[in-house]
Length: 169
Image 1 (cartoon, rainbow, N blue to C red):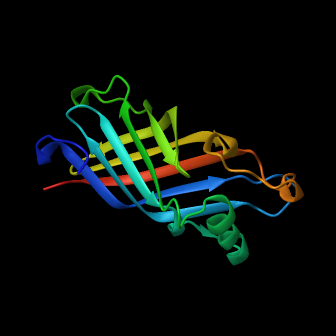
Image 2: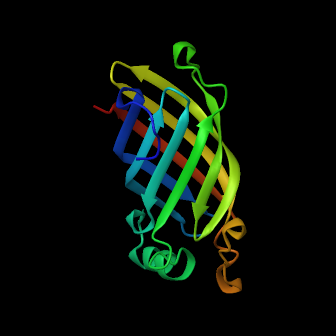
């Protein structure tokens, strides 16, 4: 898939979750969630990758979802968002409960180098749970927020993720 090592060191999920929020107080919530994110981690070297189909994000408001896909994310032209990175100072024999992942996020045809905070990293038998968050700016990905709604949508977007990865056979 993304790495060239033996399968016993890889953990995978196709049901991870990624959510984001760009809400502004006193206005309608601008938030969405996808429950079908693919992610993989290589325990041999700490490499991590995730992929989400942009159209899989669900909003409470169907019209907001339509505007997101057509006007902001342009999901027909840019159908996928990806993150590829490496857990900093990762050693599976001596795992910590939190990490930083140095990597690259690609969204809307633009790639940005960034640090992601893993606030929880737990291992249990054949399962690894990773929970984290990061913040991005819409402008970093060439997403223009029209002036008419600029007071209702935050330029700063908070992103949270959770993955329960199972040992790949």
